[in-house]
Amino acid sequence: MLRRGFQLVKGLGQITGQKFSTGRNGITIRPLLSTGTQWDTGSPFQTIRPLTMSPWPFSTQPRDYSLPNASWSEEMKRLYDHYNALCEVEVEGGGKRKGPWRRLPSYNRTIKYATGGRCLSKVLQAKARLFTRNIEEQGAGFEYVVFSNKQEKRCVCVFQAGHLLEGPPGHVHGGAIATIIDSVTGTLASYLSGPVMTANLSINYRSPIPLGSVVLVHSSLERTEGRKTFVTCQVTSADGSKLHTEATGLFVSINVGHLFGA
Ligand SMILES: CCCCCCCC(=O)SCCNC(=O)CCNC(=O)[C@H](O)C(C)(C)COP(=O)(O)OP(=O)(O)OC[C@H]1O[C@@H](n2cnc3c(N)ncnc32)[C@H](O)[C@@H]1OP(=O)(O)O
Image (cartoon, rainbow, N blue to C red):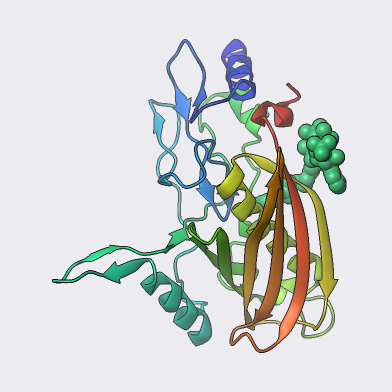
């Protein structure tokens, strides 16, 4: 088993294509692409599928956290419905086709790990959870959903900040704002460029965000240069009238083996 675990890591380090492969035993892991994960190693705009794994001991379909829940305010639901409606457009003569926008699913792990296999679990840390998805109480932390527009190379996140994200009294902590910005810009960068890591994030806080309010986090591709993907970001009030935060991000493409010391 130990050997298998290391074989998997070696396989991860050698990724150049669409999936992780462990080689001999034929097990494959597809990295998830979502607002809680994002590493799809294929072309930027290919179809995003949930993790597929086979056979045992890998676990099954994970929960998608970007779907509405009881904690979402009316504003949050309204904005969700607005962007969700743009994911499909009516066609002449009835029926619908895919629109310019798509909702990105979001899970609580970057890679859904093996439930069996002590060594593999050690490598991928069984208890690890995505920072933005690790508060179980609905509405207490980061409630968000990201929609991407492939033609325009941008995305928008509808973000409702819960009471556990307090910084200044009644307002959102700057680190929580940085976190959602990193997540949204990172999601866009990886959507466009495959596996990346944040190399630089530069943030200007313009006006405080009230706790419990719903804001929009817009992110657009600025340019790419070799392995570098530059993105911009603005956090605005839901109606767009108030600018809360501005940021720029630099993401550098990596071989996933980078994370495993390969
Ligand atoms: C939903 C979830 C979404 C979450 C998204 C969250 C993403 C994250 O938070 S990632 C975690 C935070 N980031 C990290 O821990 C990254 C730590 N840093 C690293 O691992 C490495 O420095 C890494 C990968 C960024 C770059 O290292 P490496 O692959 O060796 O590239 P390196 O050769 O140094 O640089 C490549 C290019 O980027 C440039 N570059 C690298 N870092 C910077 C920087 N900080 N500022 C400006 N330029 C930089 C280099 O100058 C070089 O440019 P050029 O190609 O023109 O010469």
